[in-house]
Image 1 (cartoon, each protein chain N blue to C red):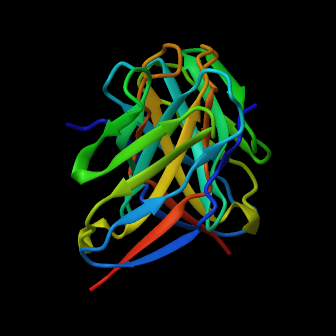
Image 2 (spheres, each protein chain N blue to C red; image 1 turned 45 degrees about the vertical axis):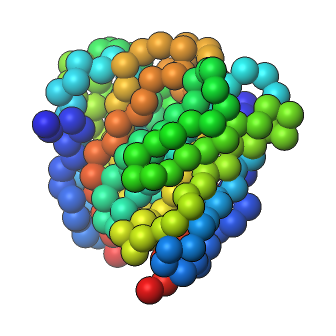
Image 3 (spheres, chains in turn green, yellow; image 1 turned 30 degrees about the vertical axis):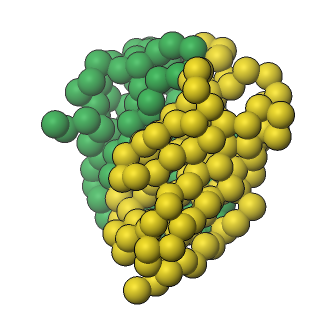
Length: 114
Length: 115
């Protein structure tokens, strides 16, 4: 059971470099999310999407971009990486509804910007 | 917007002792409530959730939580913990809207089970 798959698992970036975190899900979920997790801060929503072609900003979108060309894929782009973007990134998905449906998470991507 | 408070950032407990992890949320309107667990170097997985009905909810691995509407709380309990329960636990709240952006997570409680 694949569920939500993220790549890469670990990455070291130099300041100013760019990269894309890939996320794909095989559960045919309309809703997809990108969170970042910093120690003691819990999960902060970066961007989310309610369906192909539709994306919206979350709580901490600055420095990131997303696209949603298919139901399955929701890549997160980091432009001009900064040390403040050192974090663990989680992609997640769920089926639409009135908030009672479970969110399913990927295993995370550990990013260090040096 | 909702807010979720997990007052205890770290909870050490001896093996086979009971544990309670506290969660309070901000709004008294209708909400859905969740507890997620994160084992080291892994993603979050669902422990249990409350949508409606009985206020006592049972989840996986012997955990249960009780919804208290008057106190806007959803505390997680386990009568006897094991070493394998060492993990980070997140409380989450969802409102019944259908905007796609209705989940709110607490800052997490790190449970350490001591042998």
